[in-house]
Every structure is written in structure tokens, then in C-alpha cells.
Length: 247
Figure 1 (cartoon, rainbow, N blue to C red):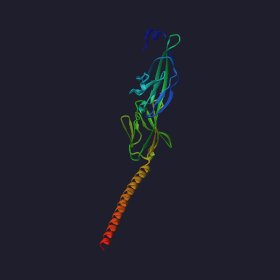
Figure 2: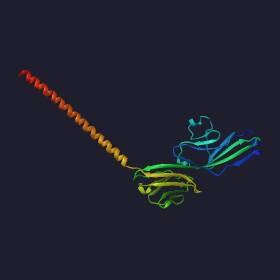
Figure 3: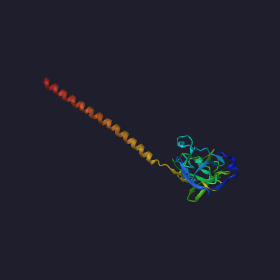
Figure 4: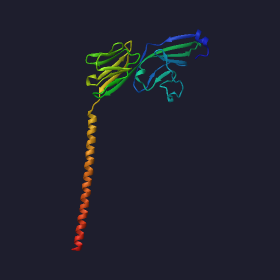
């Protein structure tokens, strides 16, 4: 990473960043973890003690990776998914005017939010039981109530768990509301607003289709009747002309 290991060994200065910077993003969209450092020699991006490979090329937006560097050291995560939620650490390395290697540590807490609409009677599946998730709560008239806790499981017979998925069986209107996922420190990882999808629009569309079909049928019947009437009229005129000719 550095061309002079002795410089790193004897001239290393570390600057810790401020407390975790809160960042919010929506599923499917992009989020930017900003960094104001300049004259960067290297950056290391990690989450949960695991380094994350980031693209550092000018054309990295065209590559397949979802994490890339923008500007001097901004980190962009694109096409956000639930598992992106959590804490990130960015270590920025650069050389100051005294040729000393400095390291600035920046920390971020990424919160993912989403909106889901579910039809009554369907199963609602929330892939939110991440490895760093400690509990899931729902906001109701009584405030925030726990629906799942790590080590204790779900608090209702209508709830089941499959791998990292929390399933609400046979969704009802009482299941609507805001669900949030908290980590072990009580920080919010994911927030999901759940509403009941309306069937009225679908019914209106179905009725419109029925009406359109009835109009089409009536049109063809009416058109057929007019054609038959015209043919009969022509035949009648021909018959009268023939009878007059021979009379």
C-alpha cells in the first residue's frame, strides 16, 4: 500500500473521526458516504471488521460492483438492499506537509427505509433478520412493541421465522404500521412502512374491462344488425325493380 514501510512505521499519525455519521437511504437507490479529506494515498472501507472491495477507477460506475469511490474519497453504495444497513468505517491515508503518513478514521451508520403494500390474507415476508439485528419492533397505538427478539424469537403465533426472514402470516389491517429493526446498541438498522393494498382499484379496473367487453359485443351486434338491414333494403329495392320491369 505504501512505498516506504519505514515511513509508515515511524511517521504514522492517526486522527480519529467524529462519532458515527447517520446516513439514510431507500432500498433500490444510491447513498453517498461523504469524506472531505484531500491528497489521498489510499482508503480502506470496512463493515463488521470485514474489508469491502471498492472501485477506485474513474469509470467504476460502469463496473458490476455496488461500492465505488467518487471524488477524492467519497464512497457510494448503489442499489441499496436491507443487508447494507449497519456501521461502516472508512480509513483514509494521506501524507502531510512534513511527509508524515496520517490516517483519518470516519464512521457511518447506514439506515435503510422501505415501503411495502400487502393485500389482506397474503403472507408478508420481511428479510430483515440480519446478523447484526437484535430486535424488531412495530409502532402501534400503544407505542413501539417487540415482535421478534434474538434469542427469544417471535411473540405471536401468527409470526414465523425462516432464515433471515420474518413472516407475518395471513396479513390483516391490524398488521399495518411501521416496523423497525434495531442492532445490539439500540441503533435503527431498517425501517419498513407497511400498508394494506386496496382492492377497489383492481375492482374498478375489472369492471372497466367488463364494461368495455360489453360495449364491444354490443357494437358488433349493432354493426351486424345495420348490415343485415342494409342488405334487406337492397334486396327489397331489387325485387321491386324486377317486378316493375315485368309488370
